[in-house]
Amino acid sequence: MRRYDLDWLRVFVFGLLIFYHVGMFFVPWGWHIKNNVEYTSIRIPMLFVNQWRLPILFLISGMGTFYALNKRTPIQFGAERIKRLFLPLVIGMLLVVPPQVYIERIVNGQYQGSYFDFWPAQSFMGVYPEGNLSWHHLWFLPYLLLFSLALLPVFVSLKKNPAGRFLKWVEVRVSEKTGLFWFLIPLYLMESLLEPFFNITHALIDDWFAIASYSTLFFYGFLLMTVQDTFWNTVTQNRRFYLYCGLMGFTLYLGLILSFEDSIAVHFTEALLKVFNLWSWILVLFGYAATYWNRPSRALTYCNEAVYPFYILHQTITIISGYFIMDLSWGFLPKFLYLVIATFGGSWIIYEFGIRRWKWLRPLFGLKLKKAFTFSHTMKSVTQGK
Image (cartoon, rainbow, N blue to C red; front, side, top):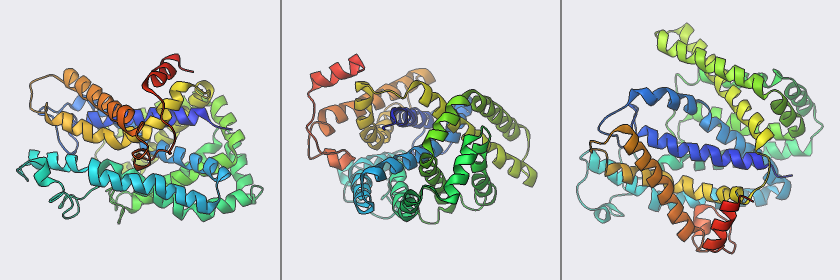
């Protein structure tokens, strides 16, 4: 049975990613281009979102893998993953990411000339950040492809042995309100012992902490679906408890990092609060989504297909739009609204009037080949919400 709540969560989290990347234009954290005025006040809401937005995406991807393997052989699944992840990655690196690198070079005074002087003559020389070849925000795709293929034998083995001792242990733990917090132990060990030595780079090579933690979350997603009836029952019944845990976890985490200087004790405490907080909010989102969002609609059908092209396109549109306003004297709110509207609107126009309608473009952006709907049918479906 299809889980519509997972589809909605996927749409919600990727939509939130657009707001997050718009926010990166304004906060005093490293990003590709920055506004002429930085706003420290928005760091706390961005820090809150940043705790769980990527972990839940890898969990949802692992859950989707469980359902995909119900309908495909391992070979079919591997081929499908390559087609839907590697091909859009290549297209993104060739066409979508280069404008981001070009604008960054222009802003930093590292290049002069038109874009077509830069692309393709300069855009693929050397590896970013020293060179220009990069996957930038598309880093999620090679990581997901790696995890999907590397863990495939484990997943096949688990599906062949649903009554195994390990899965029985998992089901017992998942059936308990606090049993789901057993999953924090590996995450805590990685956060406390690996993270200090391996900064997240999204470069895949030598990115050991990111690979370890994200692959574990991806595995968790698959594992939880092997006992899905128990899992959904637990998170639905205890969603308010997990909400209280999340509120407490983020409050304590924020108080710790704002009040104490770094030390060994602070580091290990911070690592515990961080994983407790992110896991609590993930359980909150699953619990409330299962309660209120697990129903089909035409709006969901449209958004669920559009979300992948939006993800591929959005950061390039944000950076291009931000380049033209970065030195203007507008305040935060006008610039923020401009970037949000420009990013969502630009992504939608390219998707609706290009990617969605042209068959040869669809697989390049990870979509299946099928007959495109007319614009009138699209708007009728979305507005009716059926």
